[in-house]
Image (cartoon, rainbow, N blue to C red; front, side, top):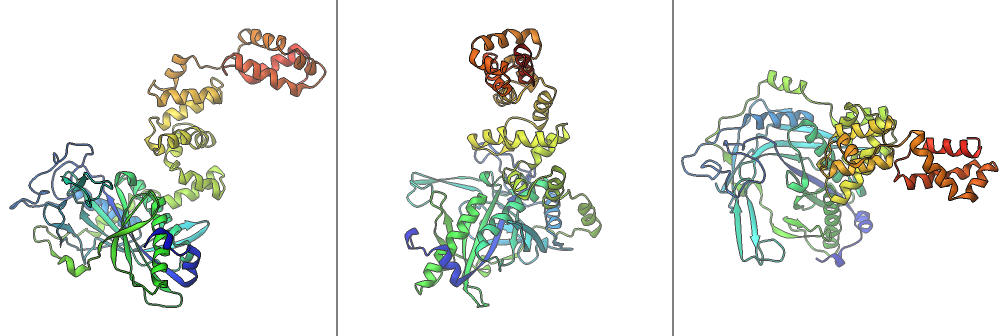
Length: 501
């Protein structure tokens, strides 16, 4: 099925109702792996963060990471889940070269968290996404296929294996079937993953950076004819790693399924690969059922039994959750729904909040993060939080503007210097000589020169057209490289030419 054979999205929704299920894997930000003491730090030499346990050597025994359990419980509570009083790990058996044990330690019929929900909003409409389960497991290693054109195994000359990631703690969050979203199903999928990412970050259990694989989504989708109760056969688009791609993958699969069904074909239950370049998916492998994995209880690990007292202690440590925080901040900052959505889309809420806490006014904090800094992040292709500038430094820039030491143009140059590694704002101001010039003796010569060079404009001001002073102010600002106090310059011009401000 090629892209050109797809039916239109509108035609697909005219005949079929989409049913979605989303499986999100989150790498937990623990210092060590889930079942051994190996480091989880990024950037190490391949296979340098391994041990007999995470390499599956005979005789090695796993030990559960207590922080991983705590993170799982906190996630479950934030998702309004029930927390199991007793659960255990299981072995999920299958062969992959990047899983050295030839089984994955996971949870099967006894997840640590279950029966929850997460409310998400799409253009003012609230959708409740019900959570089937959130269970603990471990990540696989990383395969790098070399010599092919696509980076996949097909066509590669050889493959390299790095087991540093094998054993890193994962939480897999699985939704119940999402029905009733209609033509907004892809948007609901995107909004759910976005809300989940914000929740995970707020809990502090993971940075949830999708571009780094710390959070990835499998999009399960099926279609059923309108009016039919029985679900159709699903496909599973694996490891989608951006919010935009989650929406695109769901939309593409709706159109592909409709085209196959409309031609009298049958949907194959399979995994599929998503392609960022054109938004299409291609077949991966036939999807296994649960019995194919031959699950059985992990004999080397004791069951996990969180006490009710401990669970309640953790519940009391939960931070203000993102949706509640947004509603509060929207009211405090006096923003419209559209403005608040723009701040959310930019990932700017934590930075703005931290800048306000560092002493900046809310409107100034939002101005700099949503303006100059958002522009720089977009140019550099990074998230706002990845820019080499702190909320405290942004607050200092805002303070320098408020006290009149900088104007907006000079402030942008200060931010540029901070981002370039030239030091904190005050150091950049000193090194670059960027302070606003406001004393009359320093400005007088520049004002006189501007008047002398623009006699026609000066005559208009003498004749009472004070609005013409803007041209002379501009000339002075140009001559002083933007460092003049514009308000004081205008006052001096009108004083010299007898205008009335």
